[in-house]
Image (cartoon, rainbow, N blue to C red):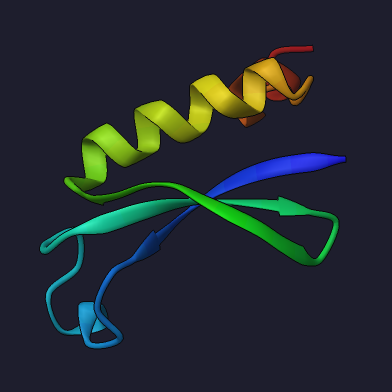
Length: 67
């Protein structure tokens, strides 16, 4: 099953959380498939990853918690 994850563009992204540029990476299980979008802000990356995961059939954690 495919999934989208948000990852930092820079390996030094841990220095200042949620700053810098990010990318949305598509995986099939543990295997890297492709980078969907890169050099975008964290909020745009999270929104895109949520949309892609929804298309892939994943449900948000908030939806699962409400059940």
